Image (cartoon, rainbow, N blue to C red; front, side):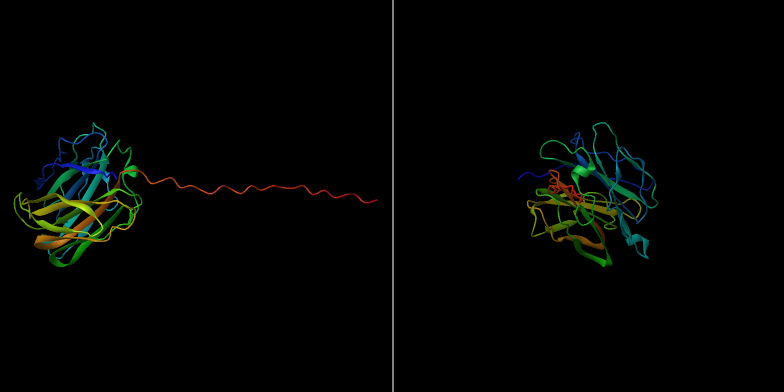
Length: 257
């Protein structure tokens, strides 16, 4: 078994205007990268995309009548070509916090995003906005993978805590179907009304259902969650049955005299 691996996260950046988001220096050509952002449910775009495009499961929105508890997870993705620089955001309004996460194939590289993951909801990703009430129970709706040996990425954004970086917020990550569950990112920011971003990963060796994942937060909040499965190898080619051979016979009629 061989799985994609987590490489590194960039330093969390935060602003009340626009921001440049730098990847970790450990990233390499061919890495699959996710640029993840949290806002007060305000729209983030990249004025300098640097090769990133919007992930199909993004954004995950948690609206509220109270702006300070609303949140939005916006995710962009790219296969790094070795030369594209750092993306720059627009000014969403209240604030934006962001980082870049890098992932690597066990051997070789992904040529395209279609190599790295399925574009189909429920197979390549699922979005789970939790808006019923502020609470400390996080849940990601599962996917059904289309290959064996996938790395399952769990992303989450929330409006709280409103505190400077270094705050550990997430714990007790669980999923009975996954192995090697490991937290990858957990950091808060205080710009504007503040916010938080988190990530953990697990591996699924056999093709099939991941089931739902859960975690516990230290601060009651709405949660914008996104699960993404990335492949170590492309799906097997579909083998079609041979076409039937149709033999046509010419029927001759004898003339009668």
